[in-house]
Image (tube, rainbow, N blue to C red; front, side, top):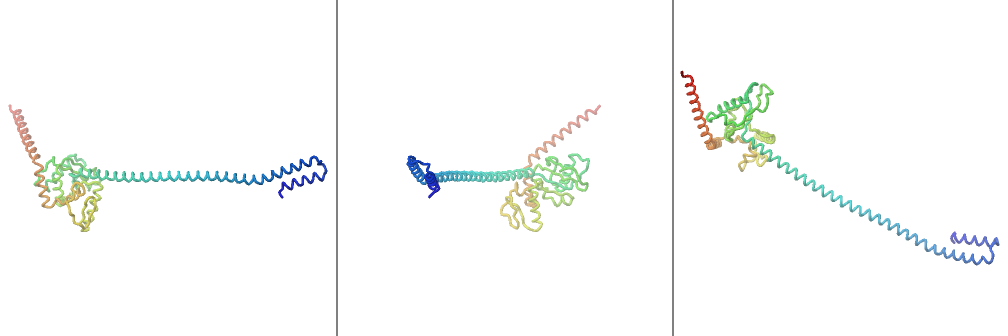
Length: 306
């Protein structure tokens, strides 16, 4: 028996016991009690249904929220994958740009070194505080005529010449960078390193920082008695070269091999072949200079005559 039944029973019993309920009202109370009983039965059936419907609604809302969360997770995963793909693409671009930059730097380095192909750096040429820009050139020409007396050296053989900077130590003159008009002249001078050293003058190629580093590594291996050389930018040690090196790139700093008699003869022949126009031009200039001098002397003689 439920609390409603107990309440109805108590109410009926109280009314009967007090005698306040008339007989004509009793039927109405019985009808009301029957109606309440029917409502009670209906409520016993309806409440579980309502509870079930409410549960279904709550479950539906929860499922909807769960589906929304799952969809959001999928969207975030897709966005994350897109970001990963973008990162991979950016890394690929960075690697490509790095490779391109490295290639451009190497090309610039080689071009700069090639532009110094006809240059030599001389050490130990005496320097004075009051020397003119032409003084180092005159001193160097005297040195070149001493070590290579059979070569007709003149000012035009040195296209440009200057010191690397002001003298910082009185006992060490500033190096002199000289650019030769012909590459074969430069190679001949390199072949006379021993003679220049006996005069207290050192000579080396005009190298960039990268090629200077390569030259230092090469010299260290050769000082140890190893056979070392560069090929395609790679240092090979204790191996015999199978092909001639590219003189324009990797072996710009190793042209001392031209000091051998065979190479010296070849460079001498190339020098004579490459310089006929110089001899013709020089002869023409000499004849013009002599003619101009002769005419000047005649004019001076005429002006002094009474």
